[in-house]
Image 1 (tube, rainbow, N blue to C red):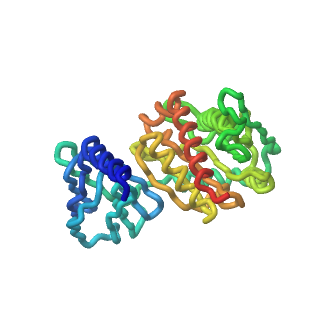
Image 2: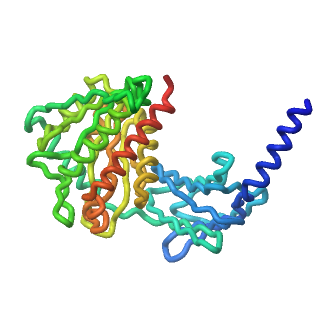
Image 3: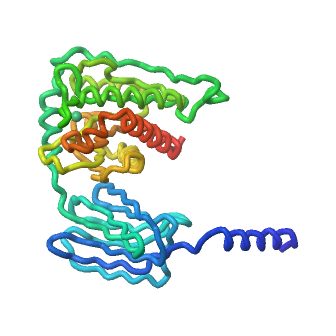
Length: 349
Ligand SMILES: [Zn+2]
């Protein structure tokens, strides 16, 4: 080794030891069952705020700034919900707990600051939103509505945004489908806002961001009208678009239910769906209600990667108020952009 390299190496050692605090280590994980709920208690040697991501029946809990201790103690119990779980090093600065689940669940993360402890609560999923979506689809599948009039929006590339005239989404075509419209208002929020208006304004905001990034965008509607789902699906298939994103806002009878859900069906959509779900969960900071594989018409009949987004619940008071704010819509649009960019960045060319 030359003298120069040794110096650089020593400088690197000095730099890394002085500027970085010792990472927190995950030392102990205990599975506990109490009053019908499963808990995972995770102890770290320092503070790390855990972040979760539920992709179907796998729950990922990431610990930023943490490593897996070499003598980590894991005690597993018997559970109807939790299968195998283990800790890996996701990257140099992030330890990841992967939990395989035996059934569909909901979860919450409680970061106990000061005690360097994280509690993951895992319990049976409570929901009825599926059936609402199914019954809506049944009524809106057949072509008895106004003919589909999709709107093509070309990229907007002012030279100030992209010097070379090419944004990250240059050459990509994205279909945005604002749910509902016309005589079909979709859900009505507890503060009286109809879903069909929220989906359209959110889609318009997302369209603007995607075009500024160089993408070509189709809106399946740009006015208050509804076409049949079969026409929308047929359009997605005949257009040479790369991806299809349907935007909805969720609703259910139980007003306590809130959070973000993402749906897909076809295996070709799985990577897009996982990427979009993570972008929305991180971007919106709502409860993570999971990526779900469900036979919804629109994601089932599209032959290109297709997802259906439900950023939050209009039937929940707090989320209904959020949903009608421009800031929140802009957050949803920004998260859509982030997810789409990440999806294409990691796509094989
Ligand atoms: Zn809807």
